[in-house]
Image (cartoon, rainbow, N blue to C red; front, top):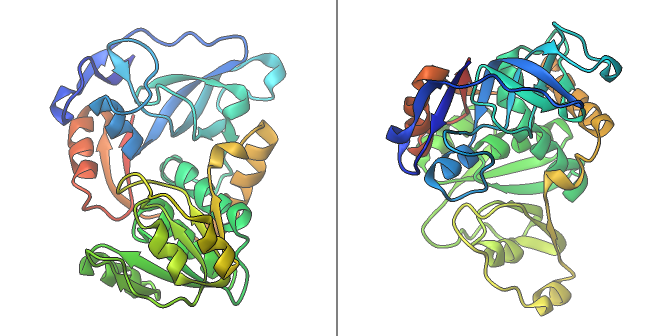
Length: 313
């Protein structure tokens, strides 16, 4: 099979589109023919040697994709031709992938492979943040860091679908205009912490270094959800800040809830329902053939995209 690989760490130029042996599924795995693959910053970090990486050179990155079953264990309930996706299985940057059956998610007819590859990881994360970390409800006022990003953009829409007022925080006027065009209130991030006022019920912070600012922006009794460190390590938090304002600082990690096949499918079904109804738009910033993966990496690494970069196998 063909795969997007790298044998040394570095920039997009280290990527090579090569023939490598087909994967051999284990007893609890299905063989999936990939049609679309979601490109994530984790794949950039793997290529750079900054993130966990499985296998041996030539390395194959990618953890998110969608396609059709080629073969599956008889007892799995899957059969050849079934349309499936996954958000957390390695070696996805290839024509074929061996995927643990429990990690497979059935795709309804209304959801195309490209949409699934663009939506699963970030959409399930947005759902977790809006449902588990803090249950958004009508009347809530929420501030979302990196609101033009993959998770942030979907979280903004998810909260609005629940009746919450979602305010986006972005890094440029261009991104602000794109969110305003979708009807959202937007703040443009300045080099210093934004002074939006302490009137938010919840702040979703994926930046890391801004946690103290986020705590200052929630109301008495409000919640800060910390779920990423895009700008670096967070500062230490004096628990007296929490006590004095009766505030909560909670963490959010999707993998703490995706603990079974049933959980994956149940949560994905809700995601697919919102997409099919039009309440959740999944923007795709660009599509590249898997052979052109170096160009896709360069585009994503440039941090100019709004929406998902998808690779087509």
